[in-house]
Image (cartoon, rainbow, N blue to C red):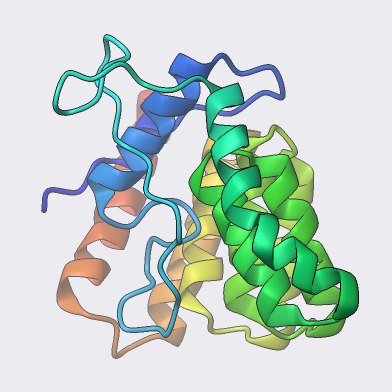
Length: 219
């Protein structure tokens, strides 16, 4: 699958229209990796339990069907999550249940709700860097760039070599803060601390560094 440069990722705002959210989701899915998942590789992660069709530029899915609104998608997530929410009433500190619910809201682009459930799960298991990366992505998509960066930096206190956190930290610094220097530092640290990184992923990171450096020279 051909990777799309994260320079195409737009900085989110809390007041995104549904079409903008669909475009962002399409880009992430086209990457096959997506922010918060970019270097997941063989890491053990559960797939999102709610499948959402990819929208084209005209707001229709791949088969030409009309895309649901964000309200429709929230209703979808609420209905899907209801059995788990009932279980959480009697077992509120079940991190696995919290993560599952968060994943349902994440998959239907209810990023603030997803972040809230991931946050509860992390209060129970703060060293889960994979979930913290997902929470950071949700914060980023909901417009909280600083919060996303803070979560990724905290992940790195638990696992300084985590490739997913380092990659996404660079992406968010670049797109969300226009901090090209900070982005390059994160990506260079990723390459340095992960010598066994797959050739394709290593190439993606190197291309990003080269692209940012080229832009810096042009400016």
